[in-house]
Image (cartoon, rainbow, N blue to C red; front, top):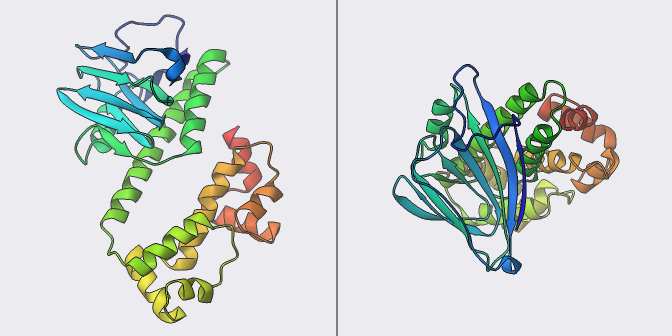
Amino acid sequence: MIHVSGWITDVRPRNGLEEKNVFLLPVSSGYQQYGPADGADYTMERPQGRLDSQILYIQKGRGLFEIEGTAFEAVSGQVVVIPAHAPHRYTYDHRQDCTVYWVHCTGYGMPDMIDALLSGGGFCIDVGQSRHMVDLFQRITMEFQRKDAQYEGICSGMLQELLHYILRKKATLEEAAHRRRDDRIDRVVTLMHEQYMYPWTMKELADRANLCPSRFIHLFTETQHVSPGRFLGKIRMDNARELLCDDNLSIGDVSRMVGFQSLQYFCRAFRAETGMSPSEYRNQAE
């Protein structure tokens, strides 16, 4: 087992921490990895719950959870939300590789945030794979370990970004589930996600759906509530944000990898989408 963690204070309260004088405050953060070499399952049981809430992201593998008497399985690409004071128990199966990121958090804003996260019912949220989420967990943990000047405020800001990012993923998937479905458009959407770096023309995309361009644009916009060009552009920008977190890639590399032939055009498009240049985004992430 690999266990890496950091705490906001040097004292580690066994039953968590409750803070009502700040909006959002991470208490501890880290990640755990398990595999066949560990020889035994990992189980955490808290019959009385904790004073703070816990957010867990299953990046790889699966876990068995029971929260307030509700038992369920969480798998890769899902977030589990454990409210403060909620009795809970969870187990990770050592027979398969499992990686879980987590953060304990408190603050007077947490009850409303928990209500928003769990608005769909249950304690589990589909978010998919996200390097950005992993990066936020890792950065909070690193700040806790280093405890440089103003680390508490920086960690609070990153916690707020993490929680709202989860809410964004949740809203996006819920919206997609209620859209009108069309197999022809679904095929093109999958193609856009898989080959977003290709310089698609509208005619090429329409051909893939066996539609004329005008009918394709109308049907795509009707089912996805956004034009095909805007949809593809957002996929490219989302992937650009992820890739910019990798310092080994130049901005030119990122531009080409997400399908832009012109670095200048990429920079303009990125600023239009995010309100900042790729360099400014990378510096902020660091």
